[in-house]
Image 1: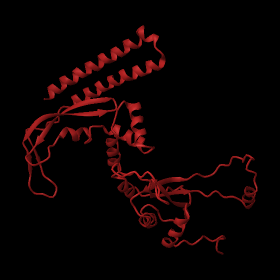
Image 2: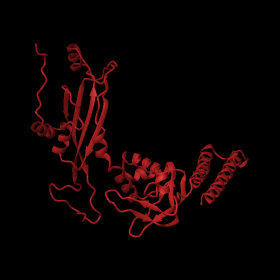
Image 3: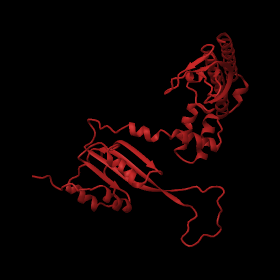
Image 4: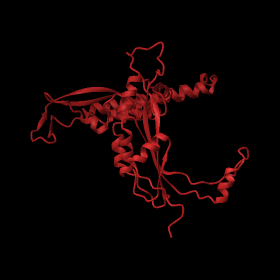
Length: 331
């Protein structure tokens, strides 16, 4: 099997070299000199991506089929019985990468009543979906910036990959399953040179909820009824900062300064080690309890709370006993 894989890899390497030679010949041929530069860019990107796809396909073929022998013996965790995978056969799967689709032929080991095992999948670190992790990463980065439709269009323009909206939603949902655990394990550690102020900010944001497609659409709404319902999203931020000290004269001057008069540029200390969370699932009490409980807020004697709405002010005052700092240091 290894020899056959090497021969296939050599064939794809030869195809990649031929594709590169065709690209080089086209770039310096007489017909290409009649095109505008933007059309040259588009065609060169298309041909160059095909060269890279063939090279990646050759690399995959050179890794073999993942065969590890006539069978596999697995000891499941928490069980004393061994599972023997005796049946094996070659299977192929299609994977869409940033360079285009590739084919992966790997050895399958199966046993009655058990899920099949593919050792090569583990060696290559293949995803369960038919899209590579790099495509999924690019999609998630684009999706968190705006609507799914814009993310799909951005990915299609950048990589030439067309995904359905349902697949996009599933990939983004899969990427968020480790969000809470990631931030629980990633506790905020104050650097030695960080500012003495530890600032926690809490706010609420209404998020319009999408109604199900089967819901009836009312032509005329009743008094006080809204077409779109909103759900409150709780947003929190924690960061450190060095104090921006101002003199009394500077404070008084800022109160009577003319708005049209340009203010002199002043270097202010910026937030450091800022972390932001948002949740639609946690209640307000649970959300604030996480900040107050110390899982994300380190111990500090100089903690300031910034509350963005009156609702949060009155509500948090019942949860967190706040005592204002003295105006003057005690004697």
